[in-house]
Image (tube, rainbow, N blue to C red; front, side, top):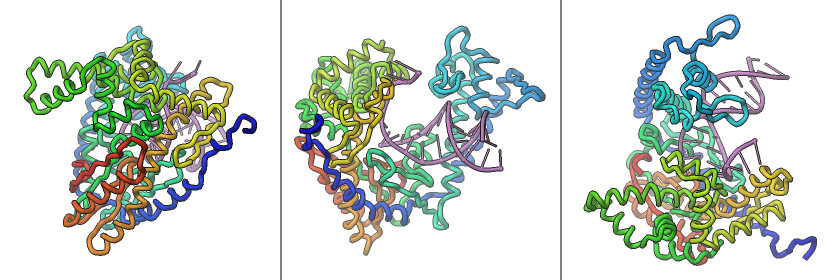
Length: 463
DNA sequence: CCACGTACACCC
DNA sequence: AAACGGGTGTACGTGG
């Protein structure tokens, strides 16, 4: 012991460089081979979105008429719906959709916010809000994805993006030129873009996904008995949390879900299920993600509100502190330990010894210090999860290279807990089984089974 | 004219 | 004065 520091607690960083180094062959192969794009499909999609964009623009113009009159001192400025500044002036100064209510403001400039959340509030007040939201989506899809992807494919329609294993502080990969880790998936139209990513001729795309890997790392590190049992029994962790919080029986919930999914539930039970899903499971699921990120009661209240669940801050506080951590007390202790480590040493590290420096954790400014502590609280799980993924990639690549002698078998993308390969149809099943077991066994966790799921399809959007 | 900060939006 | 961790990219608007 010296100066309050236990030498035994100093992390061993020697494995980190090896992990990053050993995943490079697969990363390089991803860059070199690239992923195939269906360019005619993308062009048709682009045309479709351009049409919708033009419609939305003309409707916006007809709705606002001369409502927008901005005089810059010499001329009237045309309204630009892509400018948040113009949108704010239109809605809150000319149309005054807020009436006498206060409007959410932007963080740094002193101006009304026009983000999606804000526009949703005033959707009922003026039809232009929804049109502006639609237009935003079209502009986003066209300028960030459709046009860029078409412009950047090589002469054989393959996209070669760069992956950097050393950019993110937690060891996650970063992708640029273009970024293929943020291709849309949540909205219907956005998901169409994912369908432009296709397998090579005679091949299929095989995805290998580590399920709930950060949660499993949290279970491993905390050794929380309830969490361990959830994963050992193969339960749905959010259902388990919900049951313990609301005093429901797990098996009752599971059988209800089965009946609803099989469409054999009575109308009464369907109503009960909908209530369960929105007002019980959703809050518990949100907390489950949120706690690993250090989400506060205020943040939880906010994110639930966007899902139509209007809880008070006090109710959120009680859900997090009393109810959630009441179910998983050892998880709370682990997070507390990590926060203490950050406050004491201004750093934190994961089980592989990947260190993150958080000097701000020692700041005298509470806000800055808490920011550092939140970063530290999440680091061991995010970095640990990435360790599993990178080690899996390192072990899998030589096996793929062997197969690739006779049949096409190429890695194409990694998205944090997901590894995508372009594989000859004739050996897709065989490859999938190998990849699944490699990722599953890459890093044994104590008392926690790791599970990887596989998907096979010709288009990425179908996975 | 370009560089940069900001707002917003997409992903895990 | 924030209120959720980790990223990239685009358009706008301002200031050098």
